[in-house]
Amino acid sequence: SICFVLGIKNLSQVRAANLQELVYKQGQAGVTKATVSVTWHNNEPASGPAGYEDKEYITVTRQIVVGGRNKYLINGHAAQENRVQ
Image (cartoon, rainbow, N blue to C red; front, top):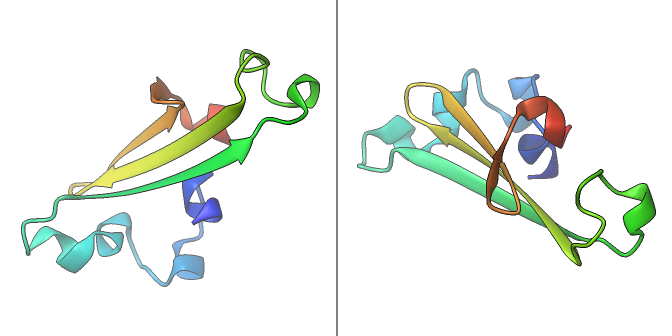
């Protein structure tokens, strides 16, 4: 889950050939997205990501949608992939 959230590129490590394989039955069962969130306690704000020094927890979310679209969130706000790596 952590590797996925942080933008893993080598999908063989998650036993998939493409992102759509990570969605239940590749969307055929009516499920069209997969979402994973990981929350870290920000107990050392000075060494954490800039802009989050005042946050007690930092939650990073990655969502993939059938069709290949990726969405990254940090504490519920849209973020670029390079921001979460």
